[in-house]
Image 1 (cartoon, helix red, strand yellow):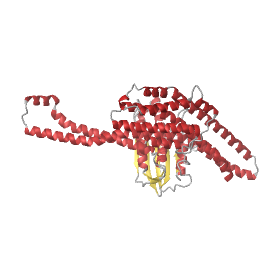
Image 2: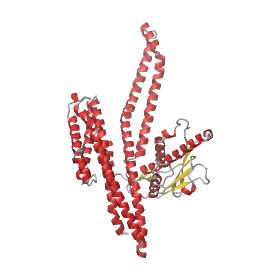
Image 3: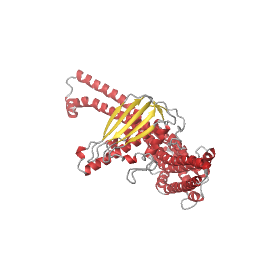
Image 4: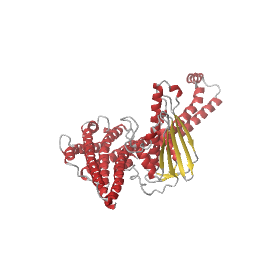
Length: 503
């Protein structure tokens, strides 16, 4: 068994390296566009402090782009980039018409020139800015996309070769003697691990991009909101002091001059005195709601939590529901989806909180899909007035375990399919609406947490409703396959670098 594991280790390592290369090359596209965005922010900045902050972010993004570019070409141990691109990719980097290496370095030089430009010459007509904008929307962007496509094509070709080798190995082992039959069973386990690794890598790239996007949006919103919230308290104090002073003037000068009386009447001063505190209160409520949304986004992404630790599952459920809130609202002729929450008194659960949020996101998204499909069916059949879309969430503690039930009254799953829904690439959704990886990944995450994920289907054909039950131990030892990488939500080196750049 140890010999087989060691033989498959280079294959697994090669897949990881391919995923890292594709991820880093894809990140170059985003960095290119982000740099242009920061460049426009730089020339639009009004204060020296703001320009200093933007210059620091622009310099960091440029350094990361240059380092990633050199790593793709010549290798970088810290980025886990092997370098040594193929002849086809080298041609894209160093030969016309793409000549991407020259374009990237020219792009970086333009950024450096813009950073060294005196403040009084920073404007929208700056030639370096115009050149950066042109490159980021034409030749450079096209070149980066060609390289990403080439890296992806090579990774897929390598994957095909590996799969072919695995199938050949399986058939050869099946024809061996009794001793080889025992090895065959072990190879089947390894084969399943490799297919799981494949689905995990696909899911990891998807969730890494989603986590980066969520964290980036939350960060960009958080700064101006904190500025607004920090000033609202002072503004409220000043307004109340001014209103108090105005009242003292009115008490002292009961009969003000006629022009003042006319102006007070024209602006409706009593209404302003009454409504201004309400306006400030509503502004504070609005800023608090935005702050809560930012907190929910950050709680959902949890990019900064690479280790398991005690977590509040209710916070994860609420953050997920807040992110999915737009899908629960009424749209057109479809009514809003009612969410009934029955939360028990739960202790903190030791787990990978970000990964459990992904499980809740997948289960709730599937429940919403099922309810929407049932809504459309009821609308077509003229029974929409009798159908009340609903999703129920219940949490309870059962001895030393936590039970989370997510139940919907949408389109049910046939009983004969319940045993297959956790298989990778199996889906009951129409073509183009599902990859068949979501529930498989959820099952892997829950099993790696030493828990179980069960599906309760409708007992009779034609009945609606599906229920998923997540059972988790309160104390998770964090052993076996408890690392983020082995649990399918691996933090690729490139995403870690980008996380630090966003934060």
